[in-house]
Length: 176
Image 1 (cartoon, one colour):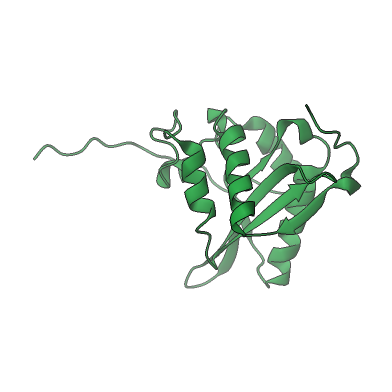
Image 2: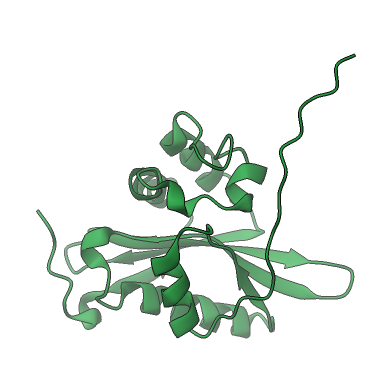
């Protein structure tokens, strides 16, 4: 049964990397993201979550569970819940540094379909931006699958702009 999430003030957000939070986030991500290949981007291919840019890896929820329980100090997990404690959305933020710049990356973000268009995604992005600013970081990146047009529109409304196109080519192994 769909939860009533029409009042954004009933949404609570918490940074939480506990095993229970990681398991809940992995289950949500596996269920929602795994049902739609439009989420597949180069990051999912690079991390083995997608095997060919068209298909999710087998046991995607288990892979998310493995990833989310091993976030370490370089990643944070943000959860959005309704007043009853039902998980409505989640995001993983990675803290990165090159030789010249510190930056943050929204590696994963999902909002349950029944909670979309009720402010959950906006609240997640606002909380992420606040944390990134508080860390003294001035760039926040994310990637989105080329066919994930609803997410693209949301991110653009949230102030993100496309800065590049990523190209990939699968190579066949050399015969030796």
